[in-house]
Image (cartoon, rainbow, N blue to C red):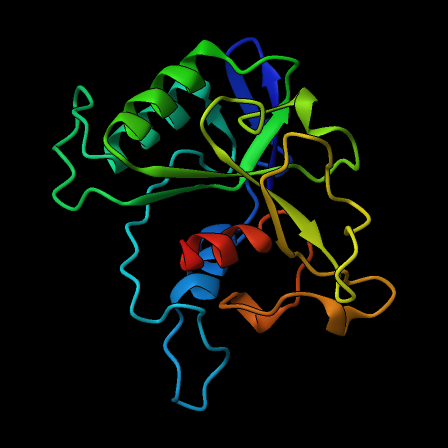
Amino acid sequence: MRSVQEKTELFSVSLAATCRSSWHGTHVAGTIGAATNNAIGIAGINWNARIVPVRALGVGGGAMSDIAEGILWAAGIAVPGLPLNPNPVKVINMSLGGASLTCPLTYQAAIDQAIAKKITVVVAAGNNNLNVSGFSPANCKGVVVVAANNRTGSKASYSNFGAGISIAAPGGEVSPIPANGILSTLDGGRPRRSMTMPMPIIKALV
């Protein structure tokens, strides 16, 4: 999960503006649909899936409205100043979020429009080991909320929890054993753990 913190309406990610890419989207896309039977890297869960990449946040962050417009554009809904998406999606993956006691109206309005087009919106529970009710977009209405479990099937140490969880999937635990992380298409092939990891597993299955 890409951790974001609200500052007025702005979100700032925990990366300096001068940092290289986190390869977040590449990791998600690989888990979903990396080519297989080629003796290279990993096999995606659904290698026949078609992926529409939508970048709503840059290395230095972005506004909540950017995320909402990303939802709308992915859904094939008109966004001022942008060409219409010629390939509307069936499932939206949102492995991002931040602390918020209620779902911001900006999020909920965009999610409602996507759901009205029969699109499944899958969101991360969060990486804070706290009740999911205090984080958005996980506390928005109509979304599929994904928690993380570890190799034994128990809750991953960092995963948020609570009645708002819809389903769980492997999220990895890289400490103390790096091999228990989730490998995917990533610069250097490093294993990872976080709510980002189970999200594409569920998305690929949906």
